[in-house]
Length: 111
Picture 1 (tube, helix red, strand yellow):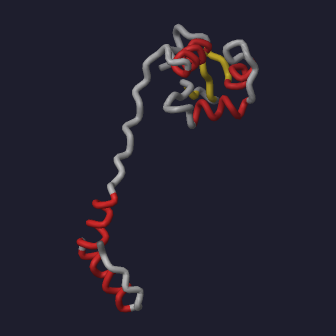
Picture 2 (cartoon, rainbow, N blue to C red):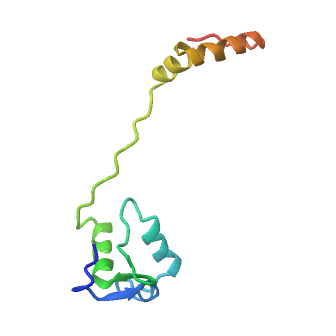
Picture 3 (cartoon, rainbow, N blue to C red):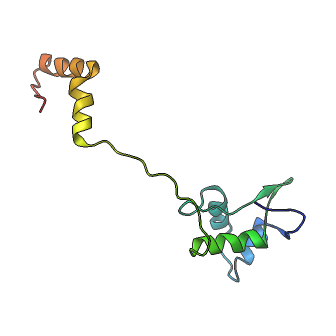
């Protein structure tokens, strides 16, 4: 979190011109702010326009290099094939769909 009292604020354009000693495209900075990279976003504040700080840029770089810990997003649990078949063929909706396919002559049999 950016602390306005202790950190030196810079615009996103200034951050793009001196991003850890490198000049990178402004659109890349916008990507870091809004989408992030692998769960890490560049910290910003909005005061009539969007600002970041030199310290926030350094924290972003450290997190990207693995020097700072970041909580990972929880992974999405996917259904197994058996669970999918259970939903499709054992639920009332699945039975109706199976009946409709038999009626149309598709004759797909459940496993």
